[in-house]
Amino acid sequence: MSSNGHETIPDIVIGRLPIYLRALNRLAGEGHEITSSHELGQRLGISSAQIRKDLSHFGGFGKQGTGYQIEYLQEKLRKVLNIDREWEVALIGMGDLGKAIANYRGFSDRGFHIACLFDSAPDKIGQTIGEFTVRPISELKESIEAQHIRLAMVAVPAEYAQGVADILVESGIKGILNYAPINLTVPSTVQVQYIDPVVGLQRMTYYLDEE
Amino acid sequence: MSSNGHETIPDIVIGRLPIYLRALNRLAGEGHEITSSHELGQRLGISSAQIRKDLSHFGGFGKQGTGYQIEYLQEKLRKVLNIDREWEVALIGMGDLGKAIANYRGFSDRGFHIACLFDSAPDKIGQTIGEFTVRPISELKESIEAQHIRLAMVAVPAEYAQGVADILVESGIKGILNYAPINLTVPSTVQVQYIDPVVGLQRMTYYLDEE
DNA sequence: TAGATTGTTAATCGATTAACAATC
DNA sequence: TAGATTGTTAATCGATTAACAATC
View 1 (spheres, protein in one colour):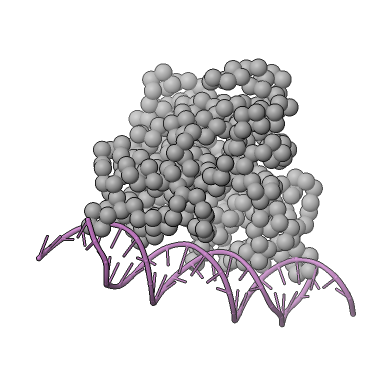
View 2: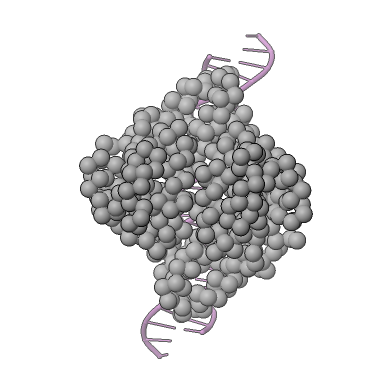
């Protein structure tokens, strides 16, 4: 029932918690103080039973007859997800995409701080983007170890992504957010999440066949 | 069994097809001509049985004892997903993220052509990015209807995303790739896919609690 | 109190896997 | 032929939903 201890909570449940949190942030922003599994479910297109079931894995966060105190639930979910603190993230690849990521405020707003930037191109190295200077990939391991960084974002071309991932794994990185359109092979102790917008588009075009 | 007809193929199966296709593209790039459900599964961390089952929804694409002809399977999957042609996509929001999207070659390489750009900021309107000129959101509907565009990418700040989505729905858009960190409410005839990297990060930090 | 909503159990539903006959 | 791998069926596993007692 505590936020660590991972008895056997299904990963699919973990995957929905950030979505719940995002909806709660929005409700809070709209001035709401209390919500219900029904209201939340309606907004997200998820059944209220599922939301209650998911949350119940971590303890009773609501009150019968009333619902959920939004601020309290946010706090609890942040604790469960281990985001009741700031995380440092390394960013590798400073092409257009890397630059957009480095400048995107959505990360820092939600507790993820980009702590170092890397690229291999000589003309990129030494550039200042945001608050940091781009450093050569040869210094990756050293930097990550020195700063005890555990998360990385990979925004290099597909053909370099596996090589970069290998170095990241060696450096002790435990989670990789991969923007390259390729599957990475890493040890089972390292997590990977994929961001491939084209996959999302292709998934939609399937349903768009009638002219 | 044909690529339209949608008897009742589970959406979760559809969601895996682009992943299979991505792996096949890679195998082809490495010079392979034939693969097996076992090899594909090993690369993707998916069981071979699941791959065979998924593919069998659309017909028998393999040969017993041999496996799958990569080029043939790619072609079949592209047909199933309706990406055996080019799709025009509208892009709304020309901040850092929108610009990175507009310049990203990964879309055009895989059959998605960004056909028009929109923003509401007067200083952005009229700018040329890539091959197109940024136009005001007030011209959105007109453009989309004129060009018969059915897909859109939304890269505006969260607070404007629902408003933009409403206009897109009115304009006849059938699929929205949403980069804003917010859930969109749209009619059930319109599909939405979400790109929220922070959700990916939060999903990983859950497993990163031991110090 | 009456009304509402939780947390939880049991029932249903759906997805994954194991196994194997068919066959290249 | 012997070996390999598909496509498919049946068995297992897991996730979602329905229902309701508990209770605010």
